[in-house]
Image (cartoon, rainbow, N blue to C red; front, side, top):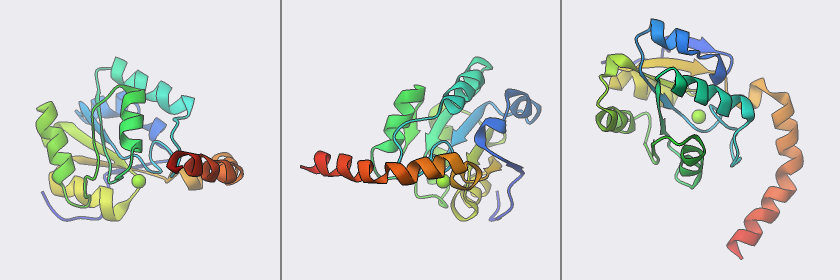
Length: 166
Ligand SMILES: [Mg+2]
């Protein structure tokens, strides 16, 4: 257990983390960051490649668990879409949320990994909790299509928000 900014491995996106890679590392619990790891900021849906990927991991016997710093509804929305447990307001880089996920699943740190896009929050939290850190490129940079779509969706997102708060 140490304070470190170094991830163990880097991936282009979260779906590149295969059951085989996790099995080789002895990982049975994969803790997921939300923002820019499984979905871009602000969105409330998951792309099909991500849901297919999550299903394939579950089929391979990997336990998935969302640990997000997000304070809003999205951690719960994504957790229910994937039918997995979640912790929000995790306060990463504090290892608190990661440790809670370990406690709730009964998995040892050495058998767990965190997949996230941030060095200063995800990587530090993972290293402090003693779990493997799998760093992914933030979605907004790797998927220009999503960025463009998100831009064009903005007026409608604002509209949706207005309606909700009305
Ligand atoms: Mg993130």
